Length: 117
Image (cartoon, rainbow, N blue to C red; front, side):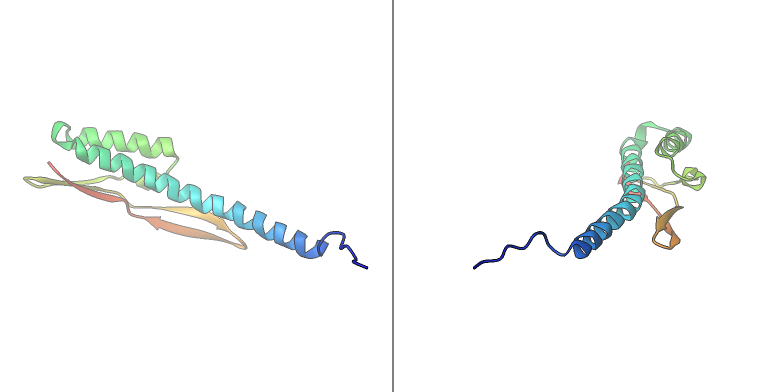
């Protein structure tokens, strides 16, 4: 006679589900910080592409607005721009606090782009 099991180990299933939800919760926090970083770096790249037509002050003010709209810390708005005869470098540095299990972690970001003029 074949005996049928009614469900798996309920405690093991519950633990696995709790672990998956915890990883997803904290993964979203870290993922959002990196998503903002990549969006900001994309804005830097776009400004560098059109830098020949814009002044440094215009580029800086546009990027400050982008940083503000993304909800980045204030130090992300401290944009460094360096031009040479045929190249431009645009960069910034900032840190974000990310909630991890049992502690708060600080992640440092330094988005930088370089493009021809």
